[in-house]
Length: 491
Image (cartoon, rainbow, N blue to C red):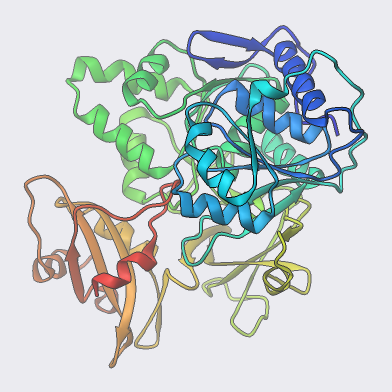
């Protein structure tokens, strides 16, 4: 496989990094140089696993596509990870080589020396002696991305070239990607959202990606006002930051920013549930109706609100073409009642091959050919609504199955609450009781009695939090998801 890099308009900018632009032709040449250098005379990397620690940059694209083109398995690592997390990723995949850029090379070198992993710079492998590339079949392993690890150690999710192509083409078709699109990329590039939904879809379609090593809200808004972007994808926490930023400006300064986002053809939210309050606030400010979708590291994207048609707040829409989705109850039977919740299970070419070197976990994640996501949903008027993870977001209290995400959405409307996480804690009477952990807005106070009073008429009595803990911040992973197991200690 040559790699999902569009070649129909070679002189068009593919990547923009700072003041530098790189055409598709230039990117392709660098990929070819790197692939030749990493092969170093060999015919094929033959699925050698090569890790890299590189932020959003042209070098990232060079390395990932170069590894693919040379027949290897690319393993992008989180540049913000602690050494213990990086060590787990390297040891669990048995990596022998790691590619980095400064300053990450010097940071990772002691760990690599300890593990016997050879570390080098991207420039060490850029060869001018271009050599023929191997024929790489669609069924070859291409990528290992680690799961978020919100409930246990991250697992290495292996996707093939066929899986990646299916994930990309599904989104390109559904969201009408074209060579006219220009999108900023500030999302972490060790997860599906950044790698597939933004970078890979753009390069497949012949679009232009503006690479940002880190999110700069003011710069982002300035570029938006200049009309640079027509497409925008982010996680809910970034929309919260944008809303706070815009609302903190005077009307004259804020108006061009609101108009700029409103003029884009599409704004997408994903990687975590978008609270209805955020959905509505963004629409009020910009006129944009966010397109919320649902996916996982293991399956790419499975569900989406429509590009053309009704987008519902609090909903993740319907299955993509080519993706079969079914809800199953606890007896592993298909859900037939419209109001009944069940676990989302998926069949599609987008579904991953295996967890690396973990056949037990792989086998346990499938049942009768269906990948079992562990996420609970209900179908309302033909649209899926996510209730949460079966293990951490479904609270079994007094015979009821409560959605932590639903309760969080209601609590976020409280004027004193900036952020909130709801979870079930062990309760002798109820089995589990509803507990809330909240970050308050500056200068605000709140106690459980006041919260319960405010919730009257907004939440059923059995959904009311029985405990409230105030904290300065909520633990989040790189994609903005709250790591709820860490909150258990508060109780």
